[in-house]
Image (cartoon, rainbow, N blue to C red; front, side, top):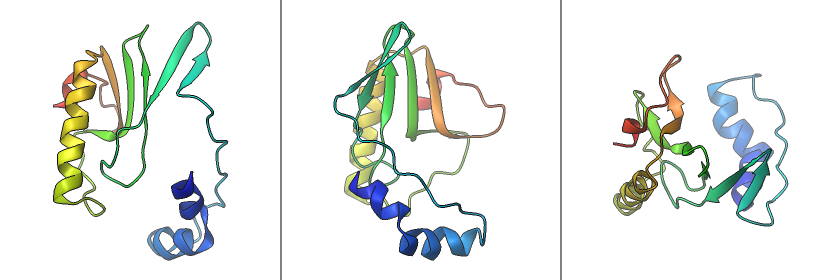
Length: 127
């Protein structure tokens, strides 16, 4: 949550994204902090996974075991250039280890946080 508050602040928003996308960045809404690592969604449960430092300092993953669906956020890329500006050698090792953990869940569908329009949600993108 601290990272969400920092990124929602005027200095961060105007300083980074404001220069890249002048006049296009609305005032963000900070989400309500979760009180558990599980989110009920209809007949399914979404489990929140903290992947550690991946392409950025703070990100998260959602895993739906009943559907074998992984919503991978910034952890998995699908045929796009990876954002490495906030990574280090150590954090990239952590990222690779996280990818191994996520692959071990044996998902049927992997929704990458970054993908080309029309890209598939194939689990091979974890590779």
